[in-house]
Image (tube, rainbow, N blue to C red; front, side, top):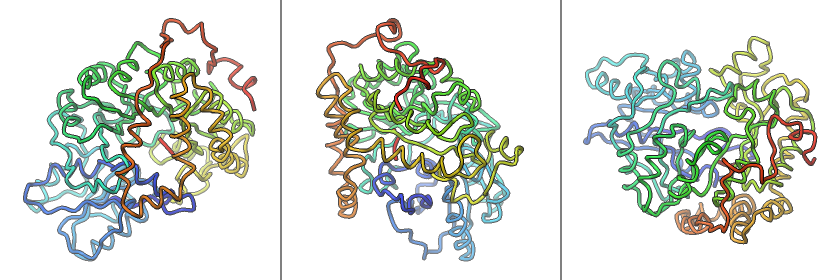
Length: 482
């Protein structure tokens, strides 16, 4: 089982620590369906050198768009050696005819149900060329084969996924097409999710779910069950889920200390264009203040290059993040991934300028822009990263927090993440990444605040920045991770 490295993992932007954060779980999840006496080796090229000189019976390769060409080369190599090769993943689902040229079988969409069917067919000598499953359930799936994961290669080895997909359907989302043909969002049984958590050693958890709070009933029961486990965890949520009810408070009580949020844009027109309805008319500032009042750090995601963006969007976005104490920021150049509504629209409008999948990494401009030139967009994107992560802005952003502990946590987290690359590289090369986990757990420790306002019921006491207000653009002074 092979996860080839993404092209950007070996580009001039290469950050070994970014690609050594946590183990991806897709292949280890499928491996749980193998027989006990099957010999299996799982290789993640982001953290190890691939060993391709063997003669396996079966090769399973997972594709994203920017590892597609490398994956095809590996697949072709093994087919020449007589192995049966199967390809699956986001890019295979988006471009099945292309992928089928390099595989004996391909998998469309999630494989929780289709992979066991394939294994039965393969053992009987009658495998099909294509597999897909409209049945979408995580009930009673076997535990992830964590024995195959090389834990010492990752900073936070306790990655976990308890849901599949997302309840929202943003036009630019790569994963939306992956779940077409069946349920697009579904969860594990709560008891099974809690059992998986209990099996994981240590304190720290990294939820890889696209939207951990997407099913409020499931999330509430999960967080109730995690009470008393003494865990600290990181995950992803939306503005809407943070502002509604008290679910985010339950998450904080259970140990949530850092959250990824897709702010994406401050323009209502851009949000409508992207079908990002969950952000429309939502109060970004109230959501940020609510999270900070609970001691939760924020990694904000922002997209540049939407049709309403002008040359001021970069400074507005960076300044807003600094002024509101966003701990880390992840910036993206709008990328029309195959299979998305955005891609279909741009193809129809003849706006796609290249189909070199290596460039579809959210760092390159691959479409015809509108108000910005391609050079302006690329330059602004590069500038935003450099500016947001300057020491001046890291310190200024950290100083916005109320408590000294939160200020210190912000400086340690943001500064440590982006400003000590040689140190991270040395730790990785000496295979000491796991020794840094206690430091991370300490940084993620709880912040005790004297006042934790109920922003859901008392928003009027706080300065507001609503995405449907003209202040979001006109009055703004001119983050997981990258």
